[in-house]
Length: 410
Image (cartoon, rainbow, N blue to C red; front, top):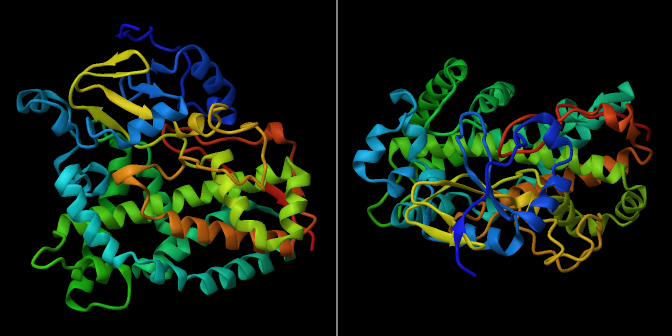
């Protein structure tokens, strides 16, 4: 078949809260009728959505698709595009915006600090924190599972791992919301004060750890070495921002949306509650099913390429839709069914290839601990409001609830 330019813009706003409530039926239609399609998204222009599993997996590994837009444009073209304020330039020095040798260099240095052993040491702390939060929640009987449980666990733990004073951790939720969803070239002015405050705080903390290293991840990033190579100050700053935002936002969504999925599938919830050792496989299925990061972060075509017989032009923005790939019947049997015993579960929620999520082991640990503790301590957990009253956050990349009112009974 001859490759052709794609169809007209798809009319739905994929970043709207109403779309987030049930995106899967729309993605099913796209996989069948228009697996590569353009959409119009405020501040993002007209990106391409890629929706079939095989195409998404290929996009995640395709070296013709780059993270840094400068690598997809000529110098003259790059100079003409709108850029974020100069004070935010350090945020584009991290892993999410790096390609090729730069990316491999930074990832190797970061991996030496972000070890599995360091993460596994957090298990006992996660268990203690979950129990403390549920002690308070059970006394009240009815809580917002997002604000009172799903958010504090990853937020406090990533703060401890990095070495951020625990009393400052709640501020990061506000700061990260100012960053999430804002593309590099069009940063919303309303977010600027929060982000500048965030960066000032982190610069002071990094400077202090440079002078007085401790047993924490910021110190490990500052001192990381590969022969004579090390991370620059801006690279450390960008990595800490990434870990503090992505390091808790996606896990909040996984814990809260995963709990909702179990509440809506009581037979599956009973299986996990009665067999705590099955939580590892259950969390993998929940990661596939609820997809806390609905789309992979943006990529840009550095040359004209063809995906599913559709031409993507050089410089175009491409978004691989993880939520759609994870519900593709060509890859998963009964993809719209939650099956906590699913064995062949090669979901794409953490990506693939060079940009596979470094924080995947931490997210898995936190979700397993949080959900096992919740089901053990509150076996008669139930929704406190009708499902139709639940609201979802807007935005392009992530998918999560604004709140989840539940009744807890031990």
